[in-house]
Image (cartoon, rainbow, N blue to C red; front, side, top):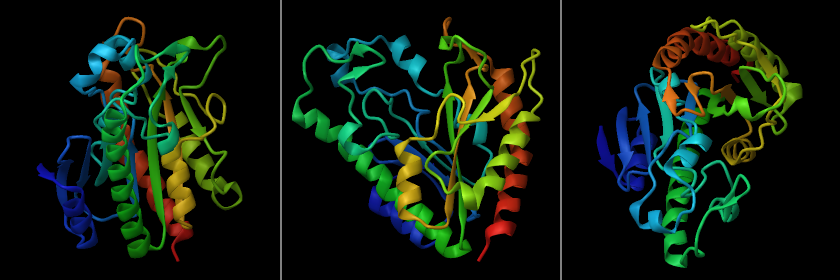
Length: 276
């Protein structure tokens, strides 16, 4: 893996170089093993929280972890193109627009003891801006090369906070062209429902049951690119004990292993259907 500037990363994308990189400020990673018609993203995978913010933050390290999406990068790590955040959404949220990316409160609790200084906000928002410069360059390259692109936008959610039965997988589709891509949504939903998970965990899958797909990552790509489908894919945190802060690596591994084939099968079918 190389440490690269934003301009160097974009140059490598434009030249169709294959590389593994971390941004020079360590805010996100991007690996491109080969240029294919699909991309995997894990914008909430990060847990870093820069030290100058610690003393001003009212949320504990556990509270931050609880709302992040740990292991979502590892679930798709075997695929050729993976972009993932390294910083916590509590510093800045890559799945929100810049004007709302820095929280003042989070899940009903004030986040900062004192308002953040403008210099600290700017430092965070620069990372947000840099990430989306790279996203734009990446999707532009894939769409230009293949005519179409499908992005698997991986997230997780805390299922135990719901007071009803919720699905293992939720696809949020309220901001995509469902007339054009509805069949692709359904085949992805069906495939996810067929995963075989350990420890007797069911793999149910629904559309717009718990979340509707309102994230900025999806909206940014959808609004800027006419032939790219973003599939906002949420897994319930059945791969950990969200209250006890314990990971279940065998569940993560089972998801990752099965997505090696299921995700590729879906992406290839998408390409065959929609290629120009």
